[in-house]
Image (cartoon, rainbow, N blue to C red; front, side, top):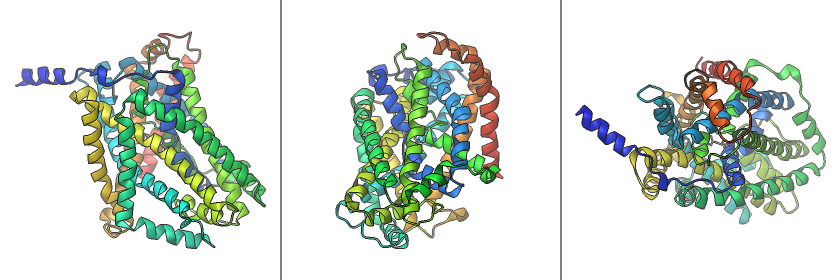
Length: 461
Ligand code: PHE
């Protein structure tokens, strides 16, 4: 029985390389990884938590977290991926066969599965708002309260929410089914530059509103008295989620890299792009919020209730709203496809499925799991085991437990088990000396795991 099992599982686990494919260009990889990083986390979450956590001071702490936690872990994930050319489960199994480290990979696949199930619900909301601004339904508000009510009514609507949720997933499935460079790379090649252009346009609009300067000051001038342990925790958690770290998404994207790729510079580019989009987004939101005399600490509804009020009062508001929600949907879509790719790569590599089967089956299962999340704001709003809705439970489990744990374990694994020397050898396989090797080894061994442990524990207690 044991022997048969070993033979069978070895057969099933042969990497299915012709179902995998590689990125065709360096830029393609960087845009795709940036597409994964840049998402609802930057465009929707970053501004509202910056607003809640004191503006400029929070931004400063966030930047430090990106530098000492985000950057080292991203390089570690890219390196593990390119070394093994495998999904997260396969990668740990190949480097450390028959050890419990493979758990990191399973946690990652599970996190991808769970995050996409609710991410697609919010992605669906953004699709709906594109349509609603087109028909001007979402751009006639006199106050943020009115816009908030409109939003609340919309997300309680079971058919509409489920319909857009399905549309969002069908779009992800359609891209991922075409494989890495046919689908994901091509889509990101077009989508990411469009996103940058749209953001710059909106920033100009926002900065030229009367009273915009007050928002710029709130956003950029740090008030150091606002830095508390809680602010640090929120900033670190956000760095994780925003850079798509801790679940093997970047590992998986790295696995499609040809060996001649320069990993360190790719890491720096992706981190800079992701951070720039978040920072730019703040420059779109805060000047507008202050120009309208609105509340920056509004919370998660900021995008969906406050911005439409801003658009309602602007000339060409419907156009601005349309552009903004197209942007948000694009960002969500390029992150959604990376979440789906982690799950799909596992079934292709480890289970020998074809890409088509993996994408269709998993897309369907993720949709079904997402349905109760989508209904959590309406029909299932009162179904709150343990005080949280279904949506909150899935989000909480994946984002607050699986991601930090996965990131911390990855850092420990690379720092102490696989070893910084082995990683450095992989990084230097086709490029000149990795000058920052010692600093990186120090960060990945001591700073990163301790910082993440700090976040992790603080969330439990
Ligand atoms: N980074 C994405 C965002 O900011 C979310 C994400 C998390 C994507 C983890 C993949 C993996 O929206």
